[in-house]
Image (spheres, rainbow, N blue to C red):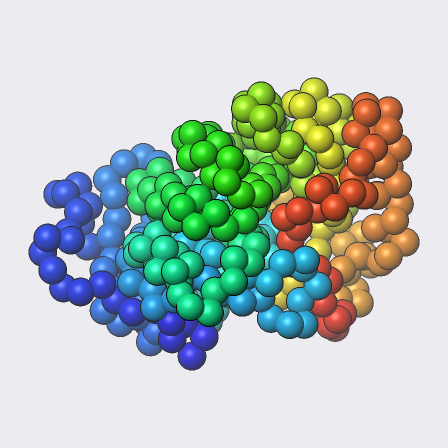
Length: 350
């Protein structure tokens, strides 16, 4: 079972949350039948269920077939309240017999012992101090992090072992941990990237309803750069028919440049299984006139044709040059990229 590295927390009343946190939904089917299940009586967590588990391991090796430039990741959460319609990680929820749509957005697995495990595994005899990437599956600074506070312990462990790491996020909550990040940067390499695919507020509210606004994310970029971090912006995803026009790209790149980011790296939308079906419903409901275009672009698989990707990238490069952000091809710009293209699979869209 792909979730065999997880187990339920011990049944200890001393571990229970205060009274406002009460057991709610049925426990996870099959994989975690005795996980501690909680809901919280606050507006920010309305409709959400959290499954607290004790993970058996936390530093994960990336499959050898992956094209990403890192080998190890840490993911303290599964599922994500950002609710991005296009999130490539959606299909991972199906491993738990949960769905890749609403369940992914509202039923979040929390590895409550993540910080303790990171420290233990960094101290292991076989660990050699390799770079660890975070935020490459679901966002480690999603809303749940404000309550569970897993990242400070993780960063502190990485700092104490002088272990290089990077973070990719849409979450402005990263600013809470700025003092720890600065401490870590004095002893090891720390890479920070924020994801801002577009600045169109109407598209943001519809396509990324649980995230901080793009402008707030760019304010976070400025705060981080003012603190001395060379922050890159991953301009992802660029959405066909919605944010891929020259005007939209120009507006986004200009805003990224104003934030003080050192680079901008474009990535056209890709639609893997799970994300593909959920995004297709969203397009059909909100932008039905675009359905034929999406059928054409994604008829061969998860990735748009290379000609389209090159066209979009060229628009971003041209805008980046105009705004002094012409280093997107450097290694720093892609320090924390998302997973790279897989072999094209024949899929259906709408």
